[in-house]
Length: 303
Image (tube, rainbow, N blue to C red; front, side, top):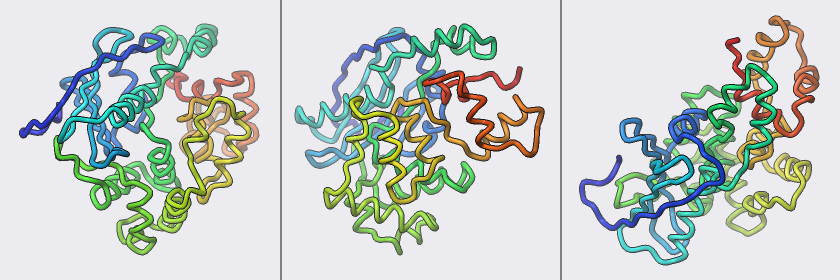
């Protein structure tokens, strides 16, 4: 585990989830684990994250599996946490691991389709997300029109330049909207963000001003179509980015269609037809209803 050699303060909690799943398979199902400030220690099967705290300073959490539905969470900080900061960290773990989300409906669908049965047997369906929607919003923007290696590089640069040093782990947090708004578009561009610099700056400014609070989109009281419209109204968010963010929000009835999805579906379902349209792809997934994004993600395309 990535603990500092200069141990500061820590406490241990056990969280329970609604359904059993294996931490290793969950973490490896989504590339988010390789984006800072996440760290996956394969040797210890430990997932960790560091974040800035509303009470000032920063803290870390480290998660290992205690039982099929139990999770051992070690909170770590430079000094004892206040109740509100502790709650922020633990709620972030629950959200990131989707401990309160049920995938029973998805698994029932999977049992009716041979290329999906492994997902049902292994309890798959969860995709790692960040503890905070702001972080996922920025990370999603860093996946547009680029390679995965560049995405990793951009996210790492954001943390290294504008993240807060978490003293207990000696790692840097994801930058706050305040930090990116203060940096400005020129500095963001110099950090390798390219055309995204202006978009990130505008988003950060809107959060700092109070005009925008993306976490309101986590509410289950808002329809998926309304959430999608709100996402697409944000600077830099098009249909692909909105689809990816909907999936991270636990809404799977829209596809995040990008070049990778087009290629996989074209080769797997359409005999590598070069004239395949996005509308045809959408129609092909229509029978899967509210689970279509997870069907794409967990379909065994090697069959």
